[in-house]
Length: 124
Image 1 (cartoon, helix red, strand yellow):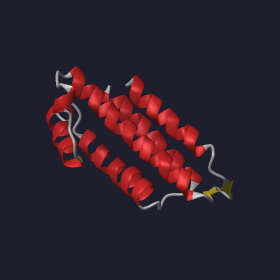
Image 2: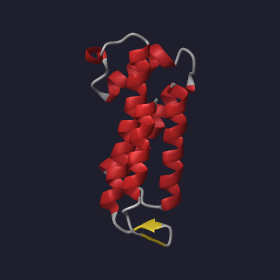
Image 3: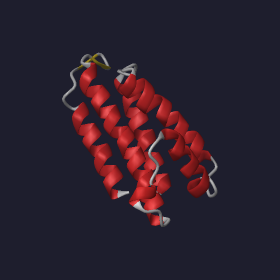
C-alpha cells in the first residue's frame, strides 16, 4: 500500500501546478497527468495485494479486463463492492479524467482522489 499511496501523493503534487479560477482548473494538461498517476496508484494497490496473495510479478494483470478478473478472484470474495468501486474509478479517473480530460472542477477532482485513496486502503 505504501507504493500506491506514494503514487497518489505524486498525483496531488502534479495538481498543485495547475492554475485554478472559480473552482475550475484552467489548464487541463496537469489535471490529466494527475489523473493518470492516480489511476496508476489504484493499479499499484491491486498489484501489491496480488503479490501478497502469492502471485509473481510476471503473473500480474496486464489489461483492465485481467484486473477485473483478478479482483473477482482475489478480492471480491471478501468484499463484493470492490469490483464495482474499481469500475467506477476506472470510468471516472482513467477514462473521463485522464483519457478524455472531462473532469476539471476542483471539488470533483478532490472527491475522486479521495475515492481512490479509500479504494487503496480497502485493498490492503
